[in-house]
Image 1: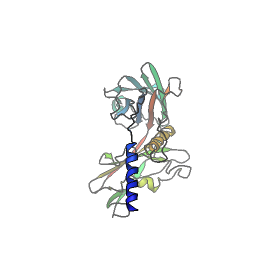
Image 2: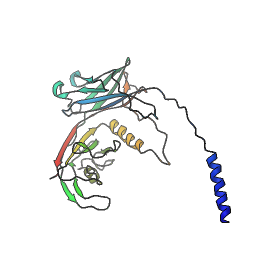
Image 3: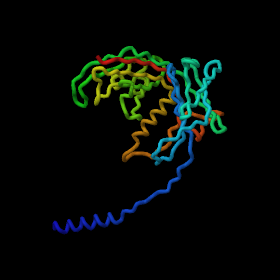
Image 4: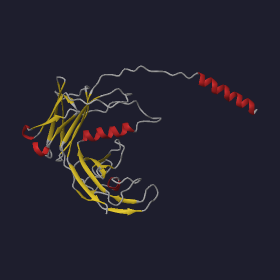
Length: 289
């Protein structure tokens, strides 16, 4: 009986292995599209809007930079903020010499001239809460955590309105989490709904600025930035997070994430991808000592 089983298994293995064929699919690469990485904030550092061209889905090369556009923001009293190309796909604006982009509550307009067309977007510069403090404490190793110093930040959401935030933690000037798709978003001070309106940010958001698998050590600088977001930017980033985890048995076919960039008449278009977002920033940092 044992020999018959082995013989049968051998036949099945040979049969299925002999049926394997390598199929090479000749897929249409599709058209190249302009991609806008338009995250601007009210900080005094140089502001950058990056333009690239899309690449085929299965391409294993970096997306090419695009330097053939003209970019400007229109602010209060029709003030124009021109972003100048550096020749590497980055369009830069220096608020220290050219004027700050800091009118809270104003709806700034983005205009991009590209290949004979004008594309537009807009973003309100929403306020951001002040970060009050960042206490830290040494904690021994535990279930799922390592020994080291853990920091938290304290800030209170604005009451009576819906707010969206992007929380960015840093360690010695570098992002705490290496995965660029690990994006920390909050609605008000919680995960969503109305329960977090006007509250201090709840513990999961306060504590996530420390990587539990690699906490801080003496001499490290722990820093956090709290960015205000428009709802469209929040939804774009939320879709990005969901798309990055779209795998496994229940994965759905990949698709472009909806952009908030429109044609000159303000209508949706399919030539340009990406996002324009304007944020106010609150910062805080501590040195572990």
